[in-house]
Image 1 (cartoon, one colour):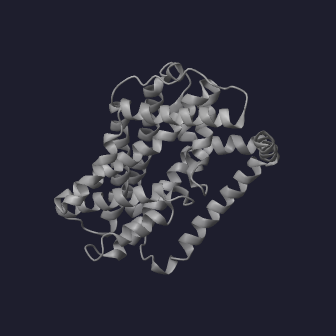
Image 2 (cartoon, rainbow, N blue to C red):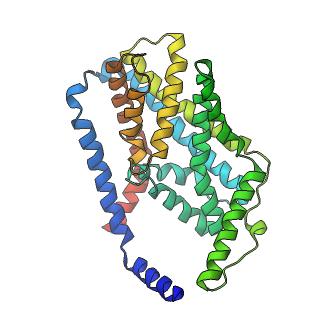
Length: 317
């Protein structure tokens, strides 16, 4: 009975045109961005002149580009940490090219593309676990910066707790537990035996993924610097407010990462950033800064991913 239900469900999934769904989701994502931007048009007061502000725009662009590549190197380091160091294909360039897919509602399509890429050149297990844990690395890095808030309140110290779980023993224990659950499911459903030697497919090479985590720290810091450059256009920040902005930026970005169905945190990140500070900093220049930063960071993702999008369009012609 259970096998029959599983077979019918598998046949149902095969009939779904996921390629068409991805196009629909992508169009929804673009519509979501347009609605979000134009519905707040009356609240946006900045007047940008490329001739006058080209240095600010160019510097923010450079930091945003740097953040994308640092994140790509972090993902490559994560794959290597899981035992994929023998992969010769360029993971960094593929990561950069598919970065634009994070704007699709659901926030999973860039993960799907990267999973398929690693699966085709290595193993499904390495692809799944390296893709699964990468957002956790980003979350730990953002929480680490947010924990600077301990200078304001001791409760921020709890934000470093997720970092404790980034070690070989705990990660291996979690992945091994998932494998046991998978084996039990295979046995209950009486599916063909798909067991394999876990230790032969996942070989975590060091106790702590220091290299990958340092890249993620650089990723968050460079994203903040790209935003901070935008802030400097509209607001004169003193030294104490720099740390406060970093804390709020890290927390808001983490919430935008966690909340599902928000393409690249659209709306969620901005709303949190305007909500968390209260009356500590003026909101009008922050709103202008957020909109300018979103335009610049999105433009960078589209620019770097253009070859990928162009190749996809050519395949459809």
